[in-house]
Image (tube, rainbow over all chains, first blue to last red; front, side):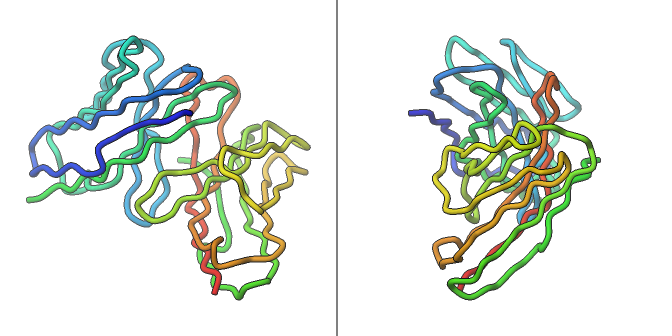
Length: 109
Length: 114
């Protein structure tokens, strides 16, 4: 079967750095995406990795290791507004995304 | 900013009723998707479309049906709603050839079947 595993919950304080891991097992792989979803809101795109390495976008960075079927999202200088659920998603082919189980991030003052 | 709309935002309905959840996008995207998501849980793909007159079932079996008569419109229909259909339904769209395969999501319809 196809699966993407993430920790269910992560907590941190404002200003800290947090890493959310994602391990995947899929029949095909074209890229790993990350989406943010606030409670009651819609998922919004954060980042995409098709090749190994680190992609940086402001306070957020995303890493991919295809040989390890592993990636992570790194959030720096955490702010209260970063409290949300974060989903990794794999494009395994034909433009469909398979979403991970989601990680709920709680940022405390 | 993504221009994808869903109506209604909230719907409470009795068992056995027929319902249609509307989804429209003004970005001209050829691909559209329907996901089902329970609170705090992952998104499950239930239907997708690669263009007009193209629809496919997703990875999660669903009793709903979809149609794609116009590029911008992708409604989802439940012929006979049941309490097990209670969930949030999210519509999304994406553009062919987009290097990042970004999907843009609508605000969702939260459906409750009594």
